[in-house]
Length: 256
Image 1 (cartoon, rainbow, N blue to C red):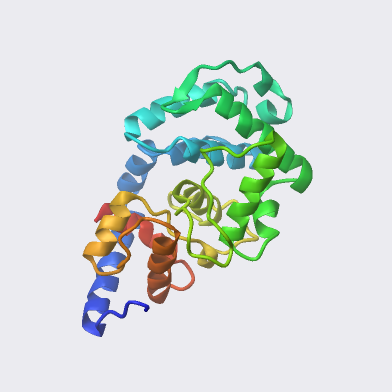
Image 2: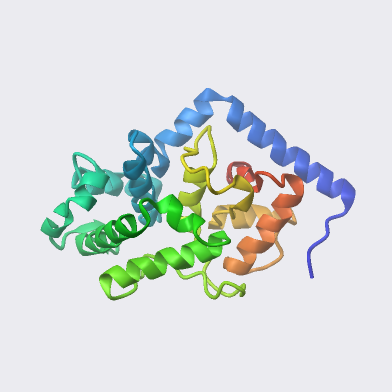
């Protein structure tokens, strides 16, 4: 059963979320400080499409745990890929990687996996936007990306979550990939807005524990598990507030 909020309460929630989002978006200091403490800073360092795309997907892949440690690990990872991620991937320099730890359970061998898979995706599709835009929705795009990465490497990676069957709510929330898609599809002030073939309306909320906790407190999310069904439930509720850009409330829910 879809969750129906009483109209006065719904209006209060919309007002509060819009107030927080407007406050965040209109403050250059808040935006600047957010970017400085967030992995989005890494794809924002580049200007070429392939560098931005690859940096976005690699940065989110290690975005779990303490933020200061995530940023330190990302600095380490991208220092291995100089002068840029695209040249490192397409030139095959990743073959020289060893077995050192990059971030918690993500090692240089895992980075090799991603580089090999990403190179295959670029050879086949031209860029990652075309891969995700080749299927009807985001969940199918995530599933296709996971399959293409596995096909290139002969195995699946524990660092790429499975959304489950396309017609099923069962599956992972795929928080990190949904975050990369938010960066690449939405336009500012934090997000990059590089992709044009996918509309912000099609995105799903990158559901982490903070956003889930706030959403339940506000009555926006009933489901107790932070899984794909919860992502769909919350995003559908946010689409009632802003059909054209529901994921913009990610900033408000995290800030609250």
